[in-house]
Structure formats: structure tokens, C-alpha cells
Amino acid sequence: MAMINPFELKTNKRLIFGWGERKQLSSLIQEFPSGGIALFTGKTVASSEAGREVIEAVEKAGKVSRHALSGEPSPAVVDEAAAQCRKEKVSLVIAMGGGSVIDAAKAVAALCCEEGSVKDYLEGVGTKKPSGKTLPLIAMPTTSGTGSEATANAVITDRAGGYKKSLRHNNYIPEIALVDPELTLSCPRSVTAACGMDAFCQLLESYFSTKASVLTDTLAFEGLIRIVRSLKQLCGDQADSPEYRSDMAYAAYLSGITLTNAGLGTVHGMAGPMGGLHDIPHGAACGLLLKPVMELTLKKIAVKWQSDRWEQKVKRVARLFSGTNVSGYTEGVESLIGSLDAWQNQFDLKPLGHYGIKEDDLGKIIIHSGNKNNPYELTVEEMEEVLLSLLG
Image (cartoon, one colour):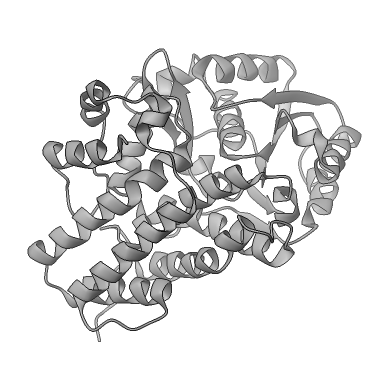
């Protein structure tokens, strides 16, 4: 029996999960010192009864600064919101929305305790190191995808600069994750599918990450079980199912924990730059890249490392998808890749050309791409091969 390798766990101070648990928000707010509250939401959140309930609960709690956001947060949006929150002496930040809304709230909560622009602190962009000081944040996801309610980074997109970069510190993990699957009921099929593919990619990449631990493996596989069972149902005729919505909300939360603690791979290493340079939904980019990147990765692992560890992982995931046992590594890889191909087809993912990405654009995407914690490092030529196959 192999000894358990050392690991640590970074996660929220508190998780509250369950259908209808948003009703705890009023009492949670009372646990923090009185002061101004900044509420970050998507622009359409008030269109649902559950969303209106949350807004009313926050407004009853005290002086509220409302920030309704659309799209991925830019440096300008973050800087402007932070300036307003400083002026209004905000002491608590609440985010109710998808990953972009929660990321924006995380960045603002941090920037309220720093000087200068968020650009100064972005990885690969700024020259300043975040202090880690931040306002307390309660994160309430309305989509099941990014797992931002459990991550240590806030992704900021600058289309003019052509980048998508992170503001990162372990202290930026939201203090409280209040995950109420009922808040995701208003998600249309396209958003449910794209977000679900993002969570799926995060779980699969962290499961195969070189920094995976016995704990992240357990959490990632549990998340994969939930997604395999529920995502197709939600994108079909059972979009209102509390059971399937709960499965996906839990899987997305687990994906946030596993990516924070085990890291991601080449799929996200390429999807990030692609989204920074072009207007393609992050989940769609991940969904497109997943099969070709994983196929290259797993086949190259067989050459580089013939180990029982990788064989058992591949066989386990292949069995989860197919429902049947496979006899060895090669058969497991073929089974898993076939399943990923079938997944891509059923979610009707559009080719890169649909988003205006042309062959001439590929070089710039590749320059900014990386392999992160992928067990095989794709070469520039292999990345180009992958992207060419996805142009359509």
C-alpha cells in the first residue's frame, strides 16, 4: 500500500448548501460588523422570485450599494466599483450571480484594501503583489460552472489588452459560500450546458493534474459522478429538477475546490488566452478543447509514464462514462475519448470559426497559452494541431 503524499486544503471558512438555503442570508449578514453593503448581481437576477428575495433581504439589512454587471469583469469595471465602495465605506460584499459576477466582487473586495488599479496586481500584468487583505465576501452562485464561490482567484478580462488574467491570493476565497441550487433554475439551456462543461473540465483536469492529492481525487471523482448523472437531464426535459440542479451545483462547488488545490491543465491553459483575445464563452472554449487535448495528453502519458497510478485513474473515469469495465490503459483511453466525443456532440458545441476565430489568429492564442499542471506538456505544434481541428 502506497503512503499518502503530503497535501493541504484551501477552501471557504464556511459552506452552506441546500435548496432554499438563501433564506439564511439575513441572519448571516448580522454576523458581520455593521456598515455599508455592496451587492453584486447579474443584470437579470431580479427577474426571478428567488433573486428578488435575496435583493430584498440585503436591502433590509442596511445601506446597500448595488452593482448590476454584464459579461466578464474588465479592469475599468472593477476599478470604478472599488472606488465607489471605498467612498461608501463598504464593510461587507455579497455576490449573487455567475462566475463573472463573483469574480468581480472578489476583485472589488480585495481592491478596497489596496491602492491603485486592479491591473497593478494581476498575474503576468502588474508589478505589485497583493497583500491578501480583503473585505469579507458572501458568494451565492446562480450558475453551476466556474466554482468561483470556492476559488482563490478572480479572473479579469481586458479585450483591448487581449488578455484574461487572475488576481490571486488564498485569502480571496469567499469567506462564506451560500450555495442554493434553486437560484440556478432561471438558467437557460445554453448557459446550463456551457457552465456544466466548464465544471466538468475543471473536475477532469484537476483529477489528472500533477498536483492532485488523495483528497482532490476523491472530490473530483464525486463531482464527475454528479455531472455524468445530471447534466444531460438538465439540458433535456428536466431543467426544473431539484435533484439534478442540486447535483450540478454541488459538482461545480467541488470543481472550485479541486482547481484551487490541485490546479488545472492545458484545456484551461489554452481556453483562458482564447477568451481574452476573442468573444467566446469560457465553457464553450473548454468544451471544444477537452477531447483533443485529453486525447493527446493520455496517449502521451502512456509513452512517458507507464504507471499503475495513471492506469487506475483512466480506467475509473472510463468506467464511469461507459458503465463497463476496461481491461487496461489503452482500452481505457479509447473508451474515455469516445465518451468525450459523444458528450461534445450532444451539447452542440459550435466550432471556433463560429466565434470569428480564424487560422491567422491561432499563433497569438498559442503564444499566450500554457500547460499549467497537465501531466503532458503539449508542444506549440501540438497546440496548433488541436486548434486547427476545431476551426470548423
